[in-house]
Image (cartoon, rainbow, N blue to C red; front, side, top):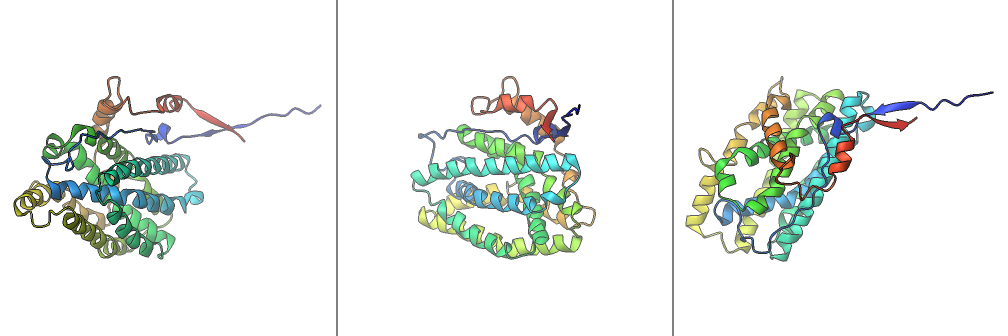
Length: 306
């Protein structure tokens, strides 16, 4: 008599390694100001329209560059982190697509930054898979510091539409949760400092110009290019001594250091604070959070038949 023994293999999920893909459903108020950041400043607000426009194609590039090396990862924790990374980035793209539809309904030309940045990404897609991954690690370094600014920059938070901020807070928290994943994959597959330096140059050459150009085109289409007073105020808010973007750019050179690692951006306490603020017992985003039960199940060990 033979006995069939069913083996089980422990499979970690993204949620179990601190990178839970949270399904969200945001609503955008019809009464929201057209320019919803920095006390209704057109120039600064349009910068965030540009960000939202470039996120969906950018997130897809990030996902594919990491997914390419998925089968080369043997460590179960990193495998789970990659699964969480892919899930979070895919959901970011989905929600920004929804926000971009809201912008389009208001005749904000959010398709322009999307089209412009797709050209830059199409150039990066001609590179070797590992160099594409290096470019992802560079852009993830930028977005991690962008995320930290979203959560800590007091002028940004206090002068912007509270309802519109909800999506950006969720996105920011998850960017910090997975900020090291692409880089850890890059290191595991033999990525080098030289490739990181090439990646930085490529991002400056191929991604920055489309982003800046699309921002200028939006200002022209909105009739704001010659609004000298508001543009000066917006430039101070973004690039002044304590400006929103200035606070990001000062961290970019760290990426070139031989001993660089994203974990050197120590945001663990900030992440805990915002997880509680957004998703704790009285969290601000519980109404928008639709898969709480699924993530709660992931607190336990998950098993798949093998």
